Length: 469
Length: 106
Image (cartoon, rainbow over all chains, first blue to last red; front, side):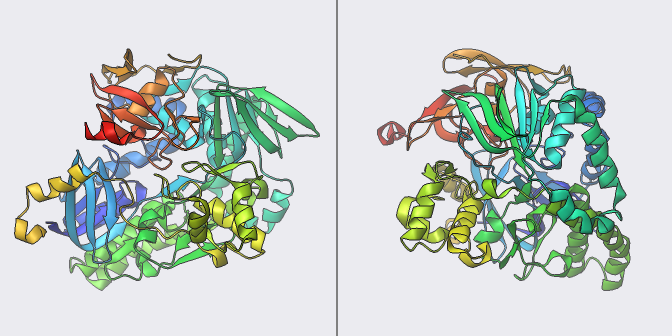
């Protein structure tokens, strides 16, 4: 039994919120599902929850950009938008039926139009020891700060590459915590490689200005550059990070090790839908193949924001707005002329926002050793499969990620390949001397999140039996 | 038992305190914490052992992606603790290895 709704949006981050607002402004009734209890997504996590007190705190340690989420959140708090938080979406069908578990019960919707705005995840950063308790992502550290106001009291080391790592370091400094080290893994020569893309990036100067400001702010932290051969050491929990940099081996003791090497689209839903995905060699990840307005190729389903390829929060909101306008038009709430009139300034702003992306992608592309790590590294955290095993299977004729499942179960644990899929594809591609585009990715099937039989049975409780069966 | 590690919490008068039971010991948390955040805030980094190799794990991504924060929450096993909001009086335990089938039926 599913409820019929005109427009359903999955994800209440920047893209989903903006899509909801654009459609609702045109008079469309919107159902907005999100796995968090309050709207904002990971980027604005905790912003909606705490009211004025948190807003005041937010300016202090999270920076002014964090508060840019407030207008988005407010715009989506209007009549005509039903925000359903705490909804774990575990199936989206090509016929636009959406099933989610919410408060221990399964709910289902049949949508005329569907916008997928399920966002990004951090690119896993595998190296020996990365599974030790106390090793987390930089994003996880930031979520603890945003959602719970938690600051590490012990020795914290930040390692990896990319803007979020530097941003978190600056936020910790502002909140009074000085990390023990900032260990940068960006390989040498990257600035030179990215330089040809700098003129384009200068069309979006705010990103570069913010970046330079952050780099200045973190100068107080002991910093190591071009670090390689990382190893997290410890017994029951992490005790140190050791690495080679600046001509020697270093060991920095830590209680918390936060890793980051960029973000990649969360493709679980678009994969399970069977959309075409293209390999993006510059960003080293796949993205769903999308048309104008984020059209997915399946009738009535669009994708907006980082889930369609990493664009960042500001551009994600603009893409969301475009998808929302198009959905309103398709639902006959906006004429084509009116849609285009409202879309024109959004499209111009989107072009500006995306100008810095190629430069940043090239500058912070992960080092080869973290894409295709050393043999002893655990690649599949769930089934505990090491990089060397995957290499050995390629020697036995294993040609792609799906075949590895028959050899040793990587990708078949609870995370369904979210943590190992990219790495397994990169390893196989490198061993075979081909592009990841050729080796492909795991076949993802629903349910994309665990659902219990008890939860499933709850769907029938409210339903007409004949219809449910 | 907590390991040596701890977080400090920025003051936020708008958020009420609550108490969880973690492995039989009362720990304090704030309204709005996930169970994983509450357990980390109390100084526990190791929150499960794996079914395959028995190695220790803790929360990694805090956003529902990695499934390394699986814990037993109010008797239900293998819950993603980073996706469950902490509630006063919740009983939380580490997942140790695989979910036992006999116990699941009991």
